[in-house]
Length: 211
Image (cartoon, rainbow, N blue to C red):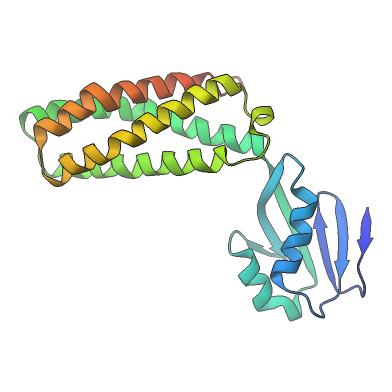
């Protein structure tokens, strides 16, 4: 299917549809608006653009504006939102399966003889929590999530657990800054680890491990 919009200068291919727009008076925002209109009610999102053979993964508008006068073709590569969400959740699952034993080991170290390596691993744990929070926000903001996610009731339980974990982070960070070994061990052992175990059980209800 093709849609013509004036002179045949810039060819945009998105979801098997071809749009042709003139270079004159075009901007990156105008082109992205045309693309977004085609995908906003579909189960897809923009993965990346292929602009005259060059793969562009981010800052689409800026790249298009910079090269607008020379662009001949834009191929829009999309991804299925459901598959993307499941890949994120599987990544979280693998992380938690490895992190939980590690955290139990950190609790033991904090209770006996913490060292520089202990602090480095705790820093890595804070980074991983931030990644999980950002992933959750990205998924939860998707339209029609209830029809995309594998089990929306389980997702709601997962969401509740994420909020619980996030609420514990300030206290954990405060103990970390003060090098409060006893406080860190207590928060990890009695609050964070049980919450992460529950989170893992919810993830197992959201992914298809037989794929």
